[in-house]
Length: 130
Image (tube, rainbow, N blue to C red; front, top):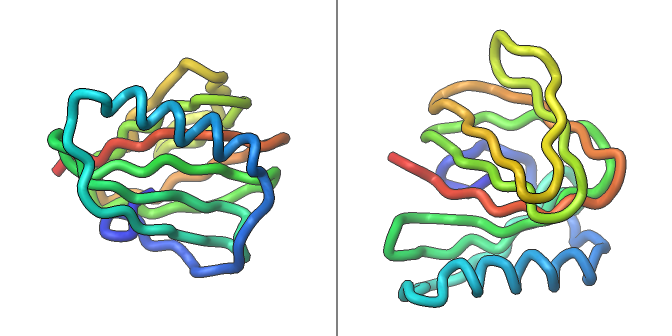
């Protein structure tokens, strides 16, 4: 859910410091052997979805949190979504709702809209592929 790859609404800061800690720790460990450059905070849907965008040797990535709710996203590039903590339901174009728990991932094609639902706080890592 990188600003350059997704078109979302700006919002206010969200809760979820514990989830943030888990998510940020995950991306730091995932990027131990990569040079991370620049970091940008993104806030969408009145602060209910927030992320930190970073540049990695493998391309752009975000680590973020989603508060309970249902959200619609649009992509500009392929997005590899990795659920770190919690459970996220996703409905990809032409598909049915599917649940993804911590440790599971899914791929969203470029130039589509997709829906997600979170019943509780969710932490994620998203890698963007051009």
